[in-house]
Length: 160
Image (cartoon, rainbow, N blue to C red):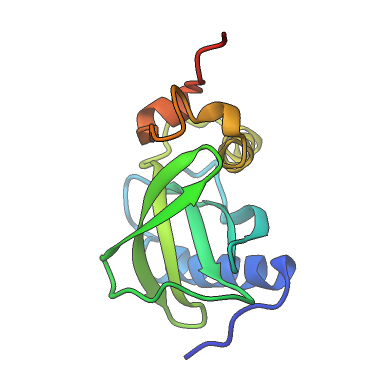
């Protein structure tokens, strides 16, 4: 078992190293790779005992959760794990990788061929993470959860 990262920078470095290894070892000849993108962790921050942020790769952009200093929600690979944010509730899928250990991911874009450069992909990832913590993204009423599609379209609660 991999020990949880103690800082956001450490969590980001582990995440990037694990997915860079995947890019080199398992994804090298896959035709859906966007050559304009690279592996980068974006906006990792502490939330509810774990590290939450986004991961940009040449084949996807995902929200990610990594074990942090608090309670980790263990799950088997491919099992769904729910997270409640100020913007609503989202389902993440559990996974694990050597050198990284357990993580949870919520797909935002896959594949990522529509991104012409890495800076645009990074900005999309940054805005997605920022939006997780914006209660105005919740929509109508405190019980309504946004779909991933509505979230990415910027759906907001109706103004009075």
